[in-house]
Length: 115
Length: 113
Image 1: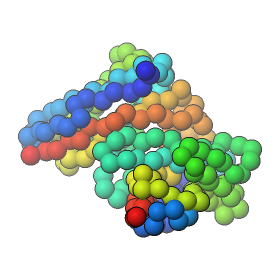
Image 2: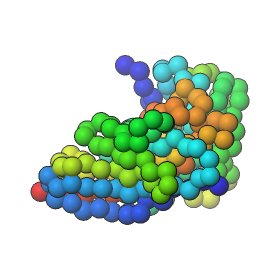
Image 3: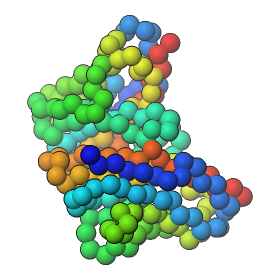
Image 4: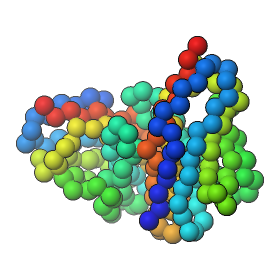
């Protein structure tokens, strides 16, 4: 069965500093990969996704992620964070063999941006 | 504006009562999903539906039931058989098939008193 591991449950960072949120997945078949953001007491919003092509994916709000097939990783990065980036971030993988659009989510990483 | 609505935002239930959470979408999506979110556990799939009048159990379906009589609507009933129903419930929809983004509603927070 596929799984997603987000290596850090919490990441504190100062405003304007760079940040990397780490995500590893386990799969023996091709996958699609997603990063979602969740602000307190709200639903999830898509930041970016990798389906195929370039391994560097750019998303909304200045975020980007790099797909690394050999390391089965899909880390999320932002060169300079803002207070408004404080939220929980979820990495997810779509199982292409499942026959339907099933997403497997990681446990989430809480990003706390401090002034 | 197109999107997904969930109601109510907050719901309180006494033990032994069934409650129904509403989910409506006007995105013309075929597929709809219900997730449960608990602190530190990410999202877990309860039920999904790929088409009207058809739905399948997800990873944690015990104690829950759904219906899909209309394309736009996918209500979730939390029954008294669900042992620990206090959680944040999220509804999502997508065009169906792998690779399509799932769009999420704002969620319903259910608390059992």
